[in-house]
Length: 118
Image (cartoon, rainbow, N blue to C red; front, side):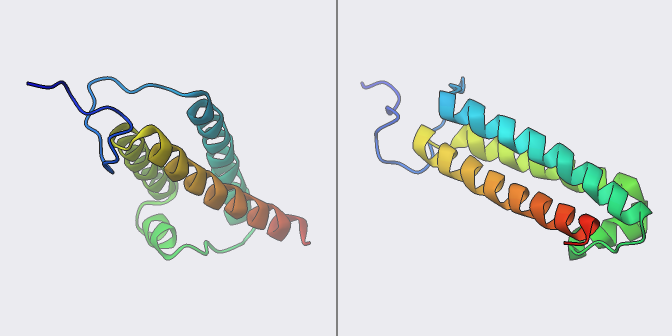
């Protein structure tokens, strides 16, 4: 009988009982949390300033539930992100977090440019 597969087994998904937080993951989580906070704040400022939401899913939930719809989308994204991070190997989790961070930072930069009129 052998133990559970090691992290370098080459499998895409590695089931774990406890998730190890690497330094890379820590940095990426910090970027994601900061960018997500900025995204929420900039979205709220933009909506209050008369801008329309550009994301169809968020716009639909905003129309249906108001700001609670925005929070619902962000909560769902975080649940999805934590689930992916918990299930993926260290390397794949870093790529997953990195891509999410890249997209979120890009959205924040875009929203900031719109609000500043750049």
